[in-house]
Image 1: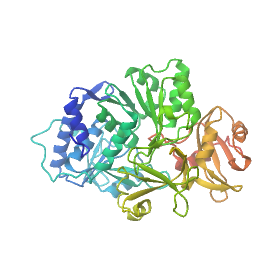
Image 2: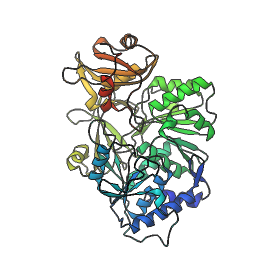
Image 3: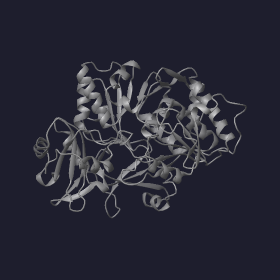
Length: 498
C-alpha cells in the first residue's frame, strides 16, 4: 500500500500488525486496530459536526492517546489538525485560536480546559463526549490530496507570538520515512515519549512507530524528572527521544542508582544542541547506547542525523543531510560558501513545508523560489559543512553578536559553559542596548567559579559581561529553554557576578 495521506500510516500498520500494541498510557494499551477504529469514530463525529476538507480542528491534549486518533481522523476528512499545549496562557491560546480559526476544539476532560464548552468563541468538547465506535459507513467527502495541509504546527514563540508552519501530507510522510531510514526503529522497540504531542518531535514518534510497528509509551512532563528511570524499567523502553534537559536528568538518575536501564539501546536528540560532554557522559554510563544527534527545524522537520559510528571522526557534527535532501551554506551575498566557512544554512528537499499560515511576507522571506523553480528554505541558522559533507551548527543568526572585535554565537558560549564541571544547563542572552551578554546556568558551582572555568575555555573578548547561577532555567513544555522568560527569572536572582 502506497503512503499518500497521513492516515495511511495507521491503516497500513493496522492491516500488517492488527494486534500489536500501538500506544500505552499508564496501564491502558491500544492496539493498532483499536486506534484505527477510534480514528474512524472520531472522523464520523467530526463530519457530523460539519467539519470538511480544509477546516481546522484544535486539539488541547498534548499527552493523550486520543489526540493521535483525532489527528488521523482529521486526515481522513482532509481537515487540518492543530495540536497545542493545554497549559498555554490564555493570551497565547487566544492568539492561536484567532489565527487558525478552528471550527471545533477538542480537549482532555482532566486538563485545565476540560470543563470548557466555549473556547474563545469556538465550540469545545471533551474526548469523553465523543463516540468511541464508528457509526455507519465512513463519511464520503471530497478526498484530500497529498499536497493538502495535514496540520499546523505552532512554533514555541520564544521571541514573538507563535506562528504556524503548514505541514502537508506529502512533506510529513517523506520526513517520517527519511528519518526512519536512518534511525531504523524496530518492531520490537518500545519508545518512551514524555515530550508533548504539540511538539513535532513528540508527534513524529507516533509516525515512526507506525512505520516500524513499534510501541509508543506516552508519559507526562513530570516523567522527565525523578520518575524517568522507573518508567524506562517498567515499560522495558528501548528508544528514548530527548532534549538536553532530559539527557541531563537521565545521567543524574543513572549515576545515583548505579544501574542503567537494561533494554535502552538508543537515544535521539533535537530541539537544542546536545553538548559533546553530555553525550560522552551518557555513553560512559550506558556504554552500549546508540546516541543520535539530529538537527532540524519545524519548517522542514529534519535536516540531518549523525549516526553513532560517525561521531568519533566528526565530533560536534549534527550529521549528514537526510536522503534526497540538499543542505548548503551561503554568505551575505547569497553565494555558496566552501567547506569550513560559516554562513546561513539553506535546505532543499521534499520535506520543506508549504510556508507559514496566513503570513505571506514571512513565507516569501524564508521559503524562496530557486532559479530552477524549486523551493529553498532559508533557515536563519548559522552553520558550516566540512569536506565530507557533515553539518555543524553555530547558532541562530539572531543570536550572533559582535563583542571585542569578535563575532560570537550564543550557542558557542553555551557549549563552552556546558563543558564546565558542575554546570547542568546553560543559556545566554546576547547584548541588548547598554546591557552586555548575560550567561545563566544551573548547577553546583558559584558564579565566580563559573566565570573562572569559562575563562579557561574562551578568550577574554568572548566572555559574557555577567554570570548567573539559577536554581532552574525556564523551560517550554517541550523541554527547550525559554529565553523569553529568562530576563524575568534573572530579575529575582541574587547570585550573579560581573
